[in-house]
Length: 588
Image 1 (cartoon, rainbow, N blue to C red):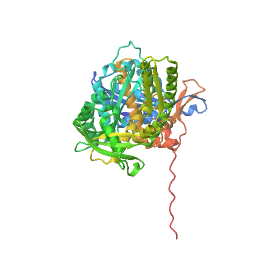
Image 2: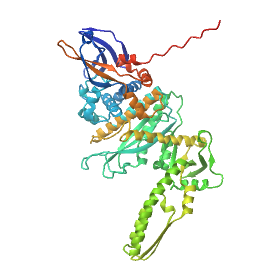
Image 3: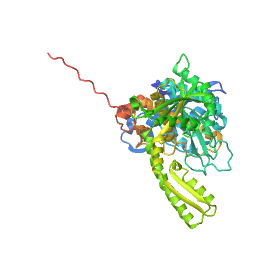
């Protein structure tokens, strides 16, 4: 056996080639610190033969499967750029089973699985074996659901939050993320945990999926202005309020504020703004956000007293004005007011898309309400409904989509013989559409910002919603279905899912593409290698050689950016060579 010199390395992974007999193999190695033995321990994984040996050229050749390279390799490259595993291990300490993966390696492996081939933890080892790029140089069978559960029981919520902040600082520094405006929102995910199973995270609450029969787990995420990158998240019980979640994140927000300043290399603290929707309004919360160093932009509930005041002011002639620049099709009105101890600027924004959506919703709800009201009218004529029951049913029929604002109902008579009349008032409906529908009331303490800047910053809220779509079923990095049942495993599973979302967002930034995220991941997944099995005529084990599939120009660009050819050097042979520029010959 002879060993060639190192042919390249990336971070703590070293690549070299080793000849065994007549076959040359590519090997990746890393080293980890053994705290018990107090020494460094080397680990190696054989990626496969570099090419078929000459003796196998006339052998029987068959395809024995394939291994993915592009999607896992790109995400792994991003993880290496920000030192993901190192930051997690430093924050969580010496966590993990003896001879098994560390918490950082396990989280990275699960994050890759959820982004590339979502599945249960029992399929994790199979996923790792199916990828040429490796998250670590451990054997794949070390990554099991039992190992994940054991690691989850050892990791604390505080250590995971410390890891998040360290990773966010590294991501901001390496990928130059803009963090002046951060969007915050919450969602929840369905679990199928039995009602009698104890736990604090999985609770019945206001499920986004409308499945009231399932226990849900909540997720609050803070996202950067650049690239939908999650910088801080919190897993919380499914029955908690949005306001309580943000309140619980205040300590983490303060630590993140300092970490981002460090990552951006600022000499003085930045002035950052948190954008959120109307479910988070609280005067006390506004004051506490200001205390930890953040400005605020929030969409007030239209039922709020100050929102009503702003909407009334916007109805005055000439109050709504067209904005400038890219928002020239948007109209807005601006006032400044004070309520309680806070001084705020209110901006009433008119959105045509929101108006059309609300009008469609009203039309659908009105059709259903008309059928219900006609049925109630028939029951009144037959005399088989009481007045109290009629009032209850009418209120229920008009409870959605602003119907009570323009459907006029008159209920008279006594308890046993009520009278009932109703009609749709077109004038009231028109007034609703011109003074309230399609309008949001933004509330901010950014008094020195232009109206355009306030509106543009609030529109960044859709980045969190886009991130949640990626985490839902059928998305790029789905949270579920989750087969965890303990709080510690659910928390670590959610942490790994958010890490997967972060890696996908940073991959998109590194690639500099405008294509949809799902299409990007499909294109990266198309960079793979077929396993060609050479069965020789003479005795001996067959040799399986990874052979890269043909790639297009966009995939070749990904190979260069994410250094995918370090996992399979022959991949570079498919990269189209740039044609030399023609020389300009001077005229004689």
